[in-house]
Image (cartoon, rainbow, N blue to C red; front, side):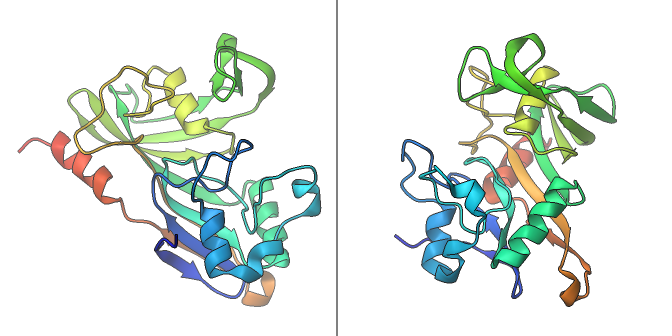
Length: 244
């Protein structure tokens, strides 16, 4: 069951793909995902099968070859992959050191008062739903630092288009943070239950627009910026919001 996925950047060490919405990066513990980015990797780059740290795979039945970060199943956009273990460690360190710059686009409900701002709210597991995350009194267990910078790109009647720059990389961070300020991402089935979707959207309106990272030193250590244009469903939603 091969799928065609667009390659945005590739060299001997790094692969950046344009992940479509609706495809999970890897399978879950229950084996519910029929086709994943990992399946695509193994079909097209079989040599990447063992690109991971043993400590991350120990005791797990989930394969993550070359995976240095993740996007939610219904989030589209730039996904970085490592083609060898040296590049894997190099990219993982950049994520750990917070030197990789990620930019997202999101359509939210409502209108944020400030044109630019910071959402600085630790995230933990939701008290109500095991697979969800939450902030403040709605969360339980370990609370982990989570910081998101935002900028309002465009305002519409009842909606806004944001640029989001996460400083940290927590599970569901952008979705949870926007819900925590009462402006959840449009069509988010988990964090905006019961709210209307926009015409043409069948998934949450979140897109990984660009990623900036450094190449290994033997490639000159230069910085690379990879961008993914807004997909058709996202653009259609924006067109429908703009007045004729």
